[in-house]
Length: 132
Length: 132
Image 1 (tube, each protein chain N blue to C red):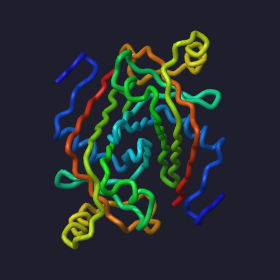
Image 2: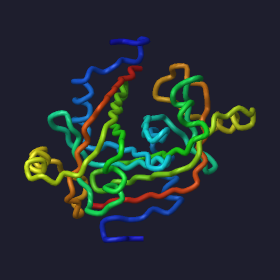
Image 3: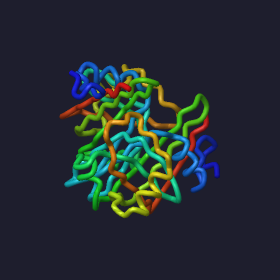
């Protein structure tokens, strides 16, 4: 759907395609009115976003039981696409959930001991593509 | 300063260099406990981050008088750098402030009528570089 000739709204499938194509996204949280933002290596599967973090990390602390926003974007010479989803994040503890996360075959940029899986379940998602 | 052999903390000058080298960053806000995240084309000058938005846009609404976080990152084969700053955002109204913003010669990805300058004044900044 073209809005104004230069900005296109992405369908949900297109949003997931952008999220899946980008290895890096940014997680935003809001705790006590203070925004935080973290770049993460992520994977997507079955309508969820997955990433790894360290046990006891600040990222665990701020994401658990809090609303999060997650964004990924893709910049090319003539198009720029960005997807933002909002939802909730949870640390995975059940074997079957961890198995589903591992099945994404996520490869973090740096293998530095991150072994806690976090899963984001979106409640809303929007994406747009600029064409110039 | 090397923390653990694979993660280096960036100096303030190095943080500004990463912010200046990246045309795109992400702004996070927290309004009523709800995080928002927006990709923006930005420029830096004199210890501030500048970007353009539209009059009356949601971005204006959520950034004004609110704490914001801003992040930019740079991914290469063997190093990944990210910088996060926190601070306050304000819409520029004074001629001299707008002149300073215009002097950054910011070129938005898409010239689509954004003509309201927003300036972020950081209160804290941190950056790190992963080497693999």
